[in-house]
Length: 293
Image 1 (cartoon, one colour):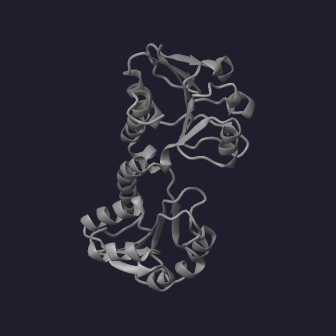
Image 2 (tube, helix red, strand yellow; image 1 turned 135 degrees about the vertical axis):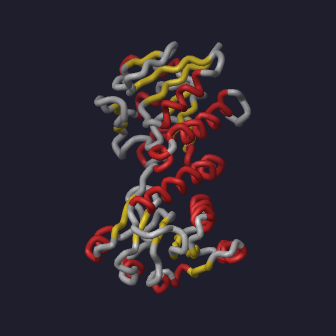
């Protein structure tokens, strides 16, 4: 017996994800929240959320943003919001797999309370590393659009040296930027130095921004504070890659006349086809049994 998958909402990344999943044998895909799409999908069922029978579903793929704090899903390709309730989740098979990009207290609690498995894709190392590539390319694009100087020879300060921070530092250095990295862990700072970048202790961030042309934050915490922003040169640009609400004091940056941009979901904006394929490759591992269910 084949797999029945419900894809509920989603952005441009999901157009590629759907096409990739459609190639699998013994798989039926139901699309919910895609009624505004101009292109049709042969062999797929487009329906309203109310028409879904949760008891028959093997997988539920939510948007990368999951739900809001009350369970509302707002599909990009539909004007009709969808409400994901605890009662609906309770009706799903006990073996169901529910995919989301990120989660929140609401989504985590209703899946935990109903003992249904929630897979948060963006918490996975493989997806985070692959997604860091279009994130870095999108960051480069934004810097070029919002500056009147070259990246080459610019002073770039990257805050955070996780999966995204490493790729950002690497790509900007490859373009000839003078890259500095601010990190908390001593082992990260050691690696920063080994890679040829300037290593900055976290408590020295505020005193290290005076010569910074481009400040890129990757940490989802309030780390780009007033103290860090006040010494930035007037031409300085802040790109915040952290999840909403970001880690920058945007209000103070505006007061100082510093351009600060919260760059959300860059992979889905600059490379939706690649980003969708990354998501599909991981989900297919669960379908084909290569990933432990």
